[in-house]
Image 1 (cartoon, rainbow, N blue to C red):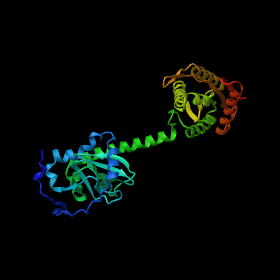
Image 2: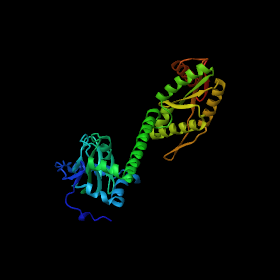
Image 3: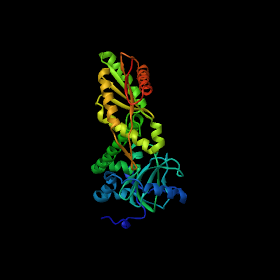
Image 4: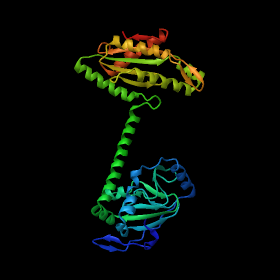
Length: 351
């Protein structure tokens, strides 16, 4: 165990093969009490930090006490800014005590990126990339930090294999986080948030792709377009949250009945659509009828209420009815309209 009070009030920095006195940091700016309270409240709702984020502090304290002379102690009070977004990335820090918030944007309306606490590190990415700070860091309470300047950081990377492995672990985790963020953004662009089905934009892309592929291979692509009958009346009677539950229930039913090659989408409002590659219209009509019957038999519960709905469906196929995406959708929609005007709760094939 290291007794921190045994360290001198200042420490030397390693530079150009010799030790030099550290330079003084400028006075840190301080947040208003209101801004600090908002940030603390937001940070308290964040999930716990992954264990591998603690690796640098543990290495320095438990395995590499011989490197302590390379660091400087820094103290900050609650609300003080350790560094601001776009500041030079000339140092990293190990947290000896207290908590720090990582923030993007204005302090009065910040985006909270995370929280760092005892034995965790902050600022190492800017050192590695030799770039400005990508976010601001603020002390949430009295904080003591151990500062590693650029020269000391390079010494550790060169002389300590464990420290280098620790950096690689952090980089690996952050790359995974970045990949997950990209995946999440992709999901947001392609999925309908209410039902989890693909959205209209993705459907249009996939329909164009499937028709081009079918044109080369010479197989049919069917399209089922459906609409929940009297959906507005259902909303007016049971309320919009109940209507949302009906939409989700239909989406779940569609997911349970489609093949892996099919593309089930929410077209808009209470309209839904399924792309069925390599499917003749007779088979698509059978699939549509199965879906219609299953939905009519479905009991949907919400807030103690039990609801039932019915579907009208239109079916079209390419290339018989249309060879372009827009024309195929229009043809299926026309068949859906015929199902509506013909009495609803039925399947109509395009002519």
